[in-house]
Each structure stands twice: as structure tokens, then as C-alpha cells.
Amino acid sequence: EVLRAEATPEGMRVDRQKAERRVQLLEEQLRSTRTQQEQTADSHRAQIQTLHTQLLEARFQSQQVLEQQTQQQRVIQQREWEREARIGATEAELMQCRNELQTLRLQASSASAMAHAEADVVSSARRDLQVLVEDRARSFPT
Image (cartoon, rainbow, N blue to C red; front, side, top):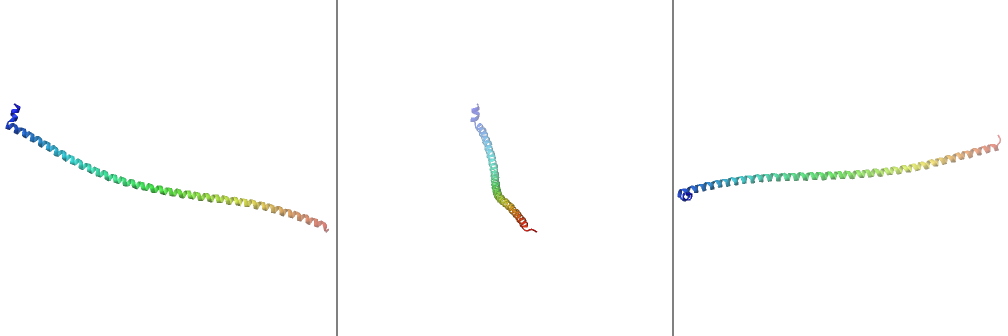
């Protein structure tokens, strides 16, 4: 009996209307899905663009930080070289001063020894002169 009802013109018209409604519903779902898909794709494109912009900014900032660090390292290295050069110059000057002091001490020691020797010679000469004066004084009665 179901087949007989569908086989009639009225049954075929009802089936066709059901099929047309089903097609319309599917077409509407398809349009809705496509619209949603396009919106999602647009949203993804916008997100990708934003992320790309952020990536470029991050790379730029990273490059700037790297350049600053490199410059700071150069300045630190230059200061270290200058400090080492000053230390070397100061150590050389200190060594020169020590050598000069040693030379002055040796000269002072030598001068002191010479002064003692001269004093000894003068003292000996005074004694000799005193003895001579006394001998002469004995030879000449007064």
C-alpha cells in the first residue's frame, strides 16, 4: 500500500516536495557552512597577519638587543684592555722607582762609607799632626 501511494501522482508530488525541502535544507546548510568557513579563514588570515607582525617586531627587538649587547661587550673589552695597560704602566713605573731607590741606597751607602773613610783619614791626619807638633815642641825648648 505504501508503494501504491507513492506511485500515484499525488504521492510523487509529496515525495518530490519532501526531496525539494531536503535539498533546500542541505543547500542552506552548505551556504551556512561555507559562510562559516570563509569567516574562519578570514579570522585565521587576520591572526596570521597579526602573528607575522608580532614576529617581525620581536625579531627587530631581538636584533636591537643583540646589537646593544655586542656594543656593551666591545666597551667592556676596551675598558679591560685600557685597565690592563694602566696596570702594566703602573707596574713598570713602580719597578723603575724601586730600581732608583736601590741605586740611591747603594750611592748613600757608598757615600757613607766614603765619609767614614774620609773622617778616618782626617782623624789620622790630625793625630799625625798632633804628634808632629808635639815632637817639634819638644825639640825647641821654650
